[in-house]
Length: 157
Image 1 (tube, one colour):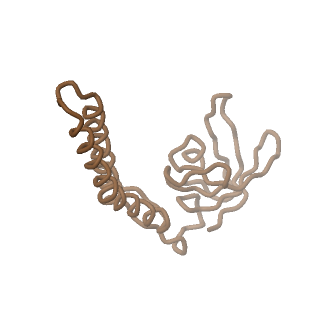
Image 2 (cartoon, rainbow, N blue to C red; image 1 turned 90 degrees about the horizontal axis):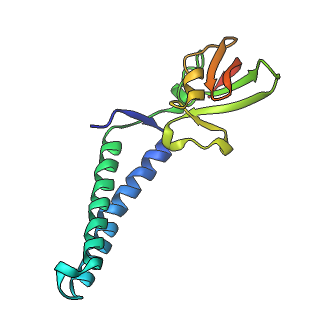
């Protein structure tokens, strides 16, 4: 069983739409592929049929995993984000103590992470280092190049 994960409403809707597509359109397309391969002759020597059956197994596995994710998804309301400490959906402005560079990130779930958009996963090394920190505290982030220190400059939603 998958663990409970927190998402924005937008991501939950996207996951549900993908699940619906795979369950109906994906399964329908897969059945057609298997039928076409079956029509090509002897099944014991039909590589196309074997490949279609393997693909069907992978599709069913993906559907099963997605069903678990959707069943355990919880929607976060951005208006209830606690800005006294860094948490999921917090927008946090940090300052690198070594070089003085400032950057702002939004802490999100793994599926929503997008570094280019300034969204980092709460389960990434960076996210883990920031989670639970309060304004003015120092967050230590363990990176391949060593431990980095960041001061929490601002927390908002």
